Image 1 (cartoon, rainbow, N blue to C red):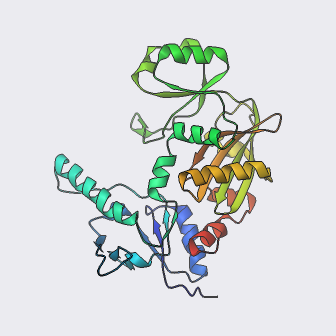
Image 2: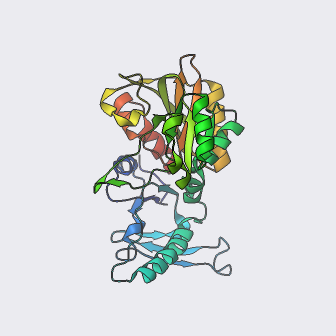
Image 3: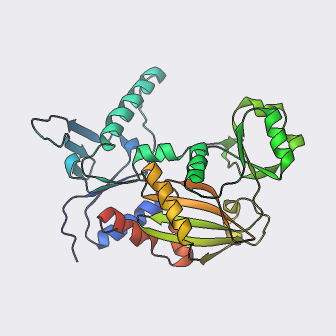
Length: 323
């Protein structure tokens, strides 16, 4: 049945994004209009004009965003799916002019996209940015009643060694940005550390150390609006600290999360103004779920392939306005 709402769903992401492809295809099956673009295409193939004039529109914003194939009325966007946009690039400008132009684009084009009237954001880009800080995540998790491992965030080698001497300890990066090793993209994995190996180089920047959880499995819980998809992830090697290291040895089981855990996760999302999030928990041998992190813009589609859970449909419901 054709969707009767003429307002488009806007998807903001890079060209190569399998998650966006799946959701857009689902929306297409429902005859929901979709406009997709990447801010990284600005200004070469993307233009915007936004008018703020209370005498013309009490809603505060009129205008258009134009891509090579679409013209989107800024005041008539149904929802915006903020996925994985690339950064702005400006060819032919010197470094200082490039920095200036990128800042103007960020606060101009980005600022307009952040205040579309009547738009449902999945998720709002400002909320995503706030929720990406791991210290903020951990503090928020504690405040809503989630179980959180003892954690130290420091650049003091003495404090780091003292912490690691008290219990088995892991190190994890506070943020995963681009990192190259010998010219090749590399990942920084969660790993166990001991007090003797924490030398004075700890002082060079901030580090996150955490008590290692004696776990038997992991839980990946994807919350999409009011729908909750909980998957138990088990590795063939029970000592694997970070299951992302080797997907080939993983098995997946759909499980029902406890009601109290669902309530706490919804409270966590509400605290940040999110309606979607990917939670990671360590499942202890006693069956307790210990909060590790929540990615406000995480990956989830591979879990539908592994389990058959209708996650693409749930995301399309949310963007369409049915969930």
